[in-house]
Length: 112
Image (cartoon, rainbow, N blue to C red; front, side):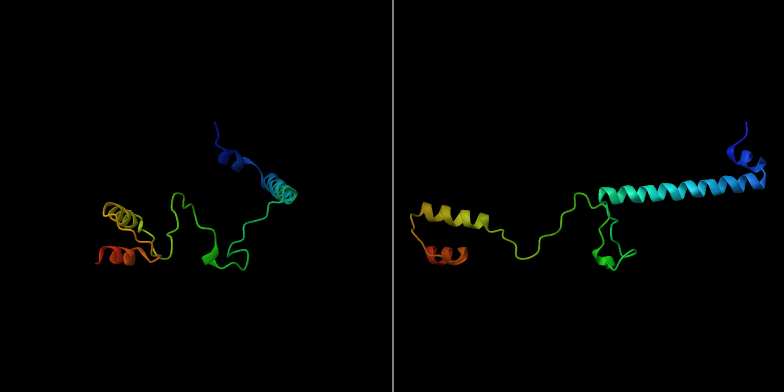
């Protein structure tokens, strides 16, 4: 049994040229049809730095599933501190209604 390559080697040059030209024509037809379908569906090509003026830094990143962007700015991890201050204030029956940051309230109420 002959491989595909061996079969092609046995064909004459004229037949190979005809087959190649036919394949080229089919490829052009398929690419044109695909372009028409994309236009009909409203699918636009993704802009990249290679096909537009989009800088490389703004291109879509490659599969970063599960990775979240780090939050910027100050950390707001004072929940535990607030709970401790409130529980201490309740346990010592201190009434303090100042609208100050937690640390100032703590120092004011507990004379620290």
